[in-house]
Length: 325
Ligand code: PBG
Ligand code: ZN
Image 1: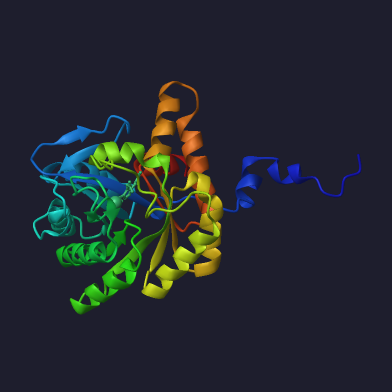
Image 2: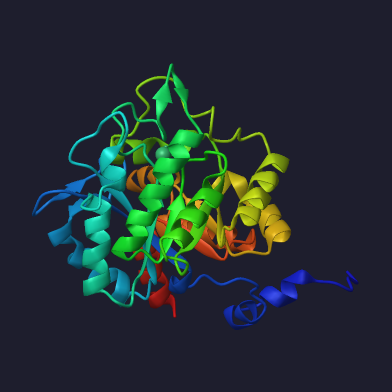
């Protein structure tokens, strides 16, 4: 056969394949999520997320030594409070669990970038991401508490705050509150396009943050909407976001691509808890090769345009990448 183009010529051996490879994962792209809780000696496994635990502060070094040793530059912190209440008090308490974790990590691991998730749902007894009145999650009143939370995280030493609540106007309010407190160097990584997804189930088990009534569709986005995701991202840029998160990642490659093209900001793919749990469950059954599918999925997020990937697979993936090199 006389074919002018034979694409297989570029697949003839691994050396040629490596030369024409367009995208490459690096440990430097990863952010590792950590659940921090009160107490001592706690490493409490999350049932639906094999390999993931809630850690008390004294147990963090075992994990953080690995994070740093593997060349992962950053962690994102989620807090499990001592007590939940209607207004999520511990979210913005100066001695809250996240605030304490940030101080400890900044002191012990000066090279690590510390990112904090800013939301109320882990801290409210009803499990919603804001204040609730007559079954409605109030917007502007919630935004005030989110701004307070962000300032308390930044005061504790967070380099980057990441609001995940999806209230309107929260990036502007957080930027203003940070600047007003002399924290103009703290960056905002905004969960701009966060969808009301079934894939957050295992996280809610980990954080005990399943809404006590209703769902999050009144503030998180409809997974059917792409244009709206772009609008959300652009609004957050206008309000002062430094980076944009798209969440979940696997079914939302188009959103990653579009937000990157439209914002030209660093775009972060959040490979969420349910995406992790699916792979872990299938791998545990011997139904797929964990290493192959994880690296393939994470690379797909980069190909979709992500600059950074938040993933519970970060430690394993970084190890596999180091072995491959
Ligand atoms: C808090 C928050 C959630 C996640 C990140 N921040 C849960 C939710 O919105 O219900 C999900 C992360 C994951 O599933 O890994 N708002
Ligand atoms: Zn929330």
